[in-house]
Image 1: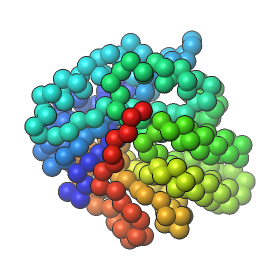
Image 2: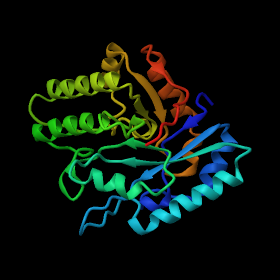
Image 3: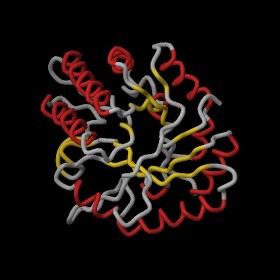
Image 4: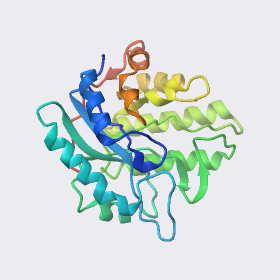
Length: 260
């Protein structure tokens, strides 16, 4: 196993992952991980809207209670951290941070999938042709990272933009994100889930990480585990390590947890 820390782990509460919380912990220990961070899709207090792809507001207590129990039980075997994968929706982000304030949250990773937000706008992980949506994704990512709340940027190369001037527009997006991440000292994720879906997946994107090398960004591998066995996929991990090392990228083994 070429990595020993994973901060990108989901739970069944998001509605598209499987397995009990304990199974992820036990699989991580079996595989030799020293650090396991849970970062399920955050509940988001958007009035009048209930998401089908994230923790529901009423499930939040149970999420943290489960992780606290597992942290105590396995404290001699592995370090468990409590996180969320959060979108930066400018209209609702202050409400999110206020909602999470009373929970024992160790970190947040940014994983933007929609612009301007989930219940109105564009899903940028599917094919889209409007350059304005790509520009908004870029703007929101940079603005969100600038808040200081996020530990790293998950799947920064997610957009499946298929519109006019595709290559030029994507390169501009990639460069702006890489430059902002470097300026803010925020690592970029090589997303292993995307790698396992190649060639259908557009990420992790070779061009993006060529630019990250030019820019000098730090990178981290995120398993993006949606089932426990994903943590054991050594072939995919090795491929992501190769993606970083073949370019001479600074691949981080772990990240110091910051107060959110």
